[in-house]
Image 1 (cartoon, protein in one colour):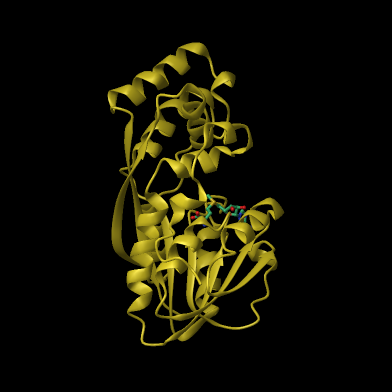
Image 2 (tube, helix red, strand yellow):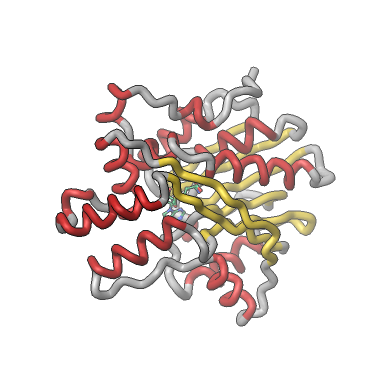
Length: 264
Ligand SMILES: C[S@@+](CC[C@H](N)C(=O)[O-])C[C@H]1O[C@@H](n2cnc3c(N)ncnc32)[C@H](O)[C@@H]1O
C-alpha cells in the first residue's frame, strides 16, 4: 500500500555522507518545494476529470520525482502511468522512485521523437523540457494533441519570465558565453503556439522557493545544477559575484512556473 504521507522529500532525504552519490539535481530537489507544489496542482486538476480511470503519459519523466508526488496524491483515480525518457540513468532512478506507488507503472527508455504511442491518453504531462529547439515546441505540442483522447487534457509546464533561476542564468551565463540566449519561457511558448493556430491556455502560475544552504558543497551542487557546469570552472570573480547574488536574496530564490493547458 502506498503511504499517503510519503512525498517527494522522502525520496531525497539528505544525509551528508550521501553527498558524493547524489546528483546535482537530487541536491537541488532536496532544497526546493517546486516539484511537490506542481504535483499538488496537477493532482487537483486531474482529480476533477470525470473519468475514474486515467491513462497518463509523462514525456521526459526524468527521475520520476514529479510523478512520485503526483501519483501519491491521485489516490481516487485508477491511474496507469507511462513515463518516457531517452536517458537510461533517469529511467532507472524513476523505477526506484516509483516502486511504492499503487498505480500501474510503465517506463520506457525512448525519446519522444521515436515513441510510438500504443494508445491515446486522458492526460499528458510535459514538464520542463528545455531540450526542445526554437522551432520544435510547436510541432511537439501539435503531436501531443494527437495522442490525447477526445476528452483528454495536456499540461505543458515551463518557467515563467519572472524567476530567480532565469534571472541568475541570464546575468552570469551572458558573461560566460558569447552566444548566450535566454532559455525559452512560457510566454515565448504561448506566443509561438498562438502564431501557429494552436490553443494553449495559461491556467496557473506557481510560485515556489529554493533554499540554498550555507554548506559549501551542497551550495556548489545546487549551483552546478542551475548552471550545468561546476562553479570551479568559472572565473573567481564570477564565483564571488554569484555568492553575492545568493546572499542578496538571503539564500532563498523565488521561482515560478507556468502551467499551460492544451486539448486535442
Ligand atoms: C529538466 S528534466 C525534467 C524532468 C521532469 N519532466 C520534471 O519536470 O521533473 C528534462 C528531461 O527531458 C528528458 N529529455 C531529453 N530529451 C528528450 C527527448 N527527446 N524526449 C523525451 N525526453 C527527453 C531529459 O532526459 C530529462 O530527463
